[in-house]
Length: 234
Image (cartoon, rainbow, N blue to C red; front, side):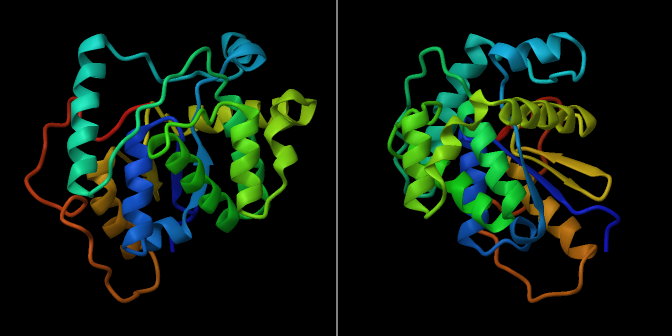
């Protein structure tokens, strides 16, 4: 058994994080079940100032227009392979801490409930094009799972601000620069195409279990260059 639980960093903003969650949920991922899920988000407002004050370093950098256009095509291809239709949301002045803080609080109380909420929020964004950075949408996702809809406004409280700071420090400690980002033992894995090797590494550190069949889109295959691997973004 590894000294620390495997960590799975998730973002409701990222389509690659969404696809990784759907793949893992679909094939009964032991890594998803066992890992400690944590939240990746881009801070705004007071939390952005917290980064500026150097209490944490935020390692994600905005992508170029060329990379953004590539991701639009790439995600569409990946979704078609899974027989999914992406509904691209339009974000105007999003406050990502709304969903991030609510999700982090649920995860702190129950990893199982938090993982259900992470998938529900991601599905709402990428299948329905809903604004999951708005309190009303987050509250609906919470209540649909039998959770406290009031957590959608937690980000506006001192407790929510402190939770946001804690999340940013976790991101900094693990060097998270994009998602999906998984840490198994001391090894980090970034990107949708690294899900399979992360599963294998996790299996090697835990009690042997029946093997799961990874879907062709998530299974191994020809290795890719490591300079800017596909299937990962913020």
